[in-house]
Image 1 (cartoon, rainbow, N blue to C red):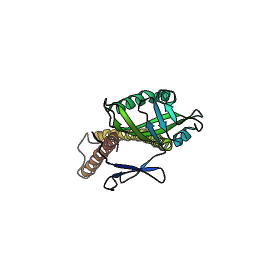
Image 2 (cartoon, rainbow, N blue to C red):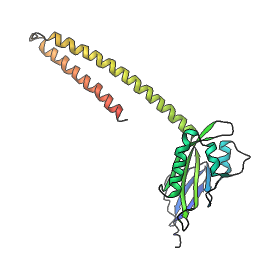
Image 3 (tube, helix red, strand yellow):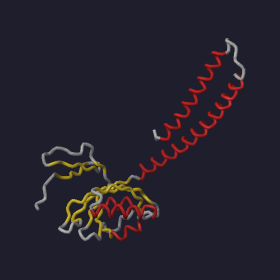
Image 4 (cartoon, helix red, strand yellow):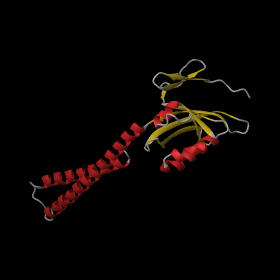
Length: 219
């Protein structure tokens, strides 16, 4: 069956990709940023990467053809199982697109976070990938900022929980004092003010409880 021509991938200035349909309309309004490209070999044994990818990891003098088996030595141990699983699912067709974030070992011994995006362009008669292409983006700074935000959020949640607990304790004391105060019917003059205090206490308690529900849903 003759492959159907859909369009072309255009490499833009500033390391960005843009898919142009055959009618010259841009199907991707926001160009996809990338730092390098990668092409999977037909035999599935090698991965051809651009020199920029090697530069990111500090392997300037290495060959741009990387054995897939060697990836196990440079993928972070905590990411290895997920990386192998996602790659297997992608190549088998279980997952149509590859969109994974993993840490890779640099030449200096440190790890960098890279975002891998890929698509099987063509499969052979046996259904195996015959042409796979993708992009690689260094997201180390983005991941670092994300981790800082996540840590800040955890600290804020802890502070909120402690503050909420202390406020509810004080409200419990206040409600207990109101109960003691009203063991005998209050005077006509004091009764409306006591009711105002009780109503306000209940409202504050509901609002504090709501802040926990609001936090739990991740808003």
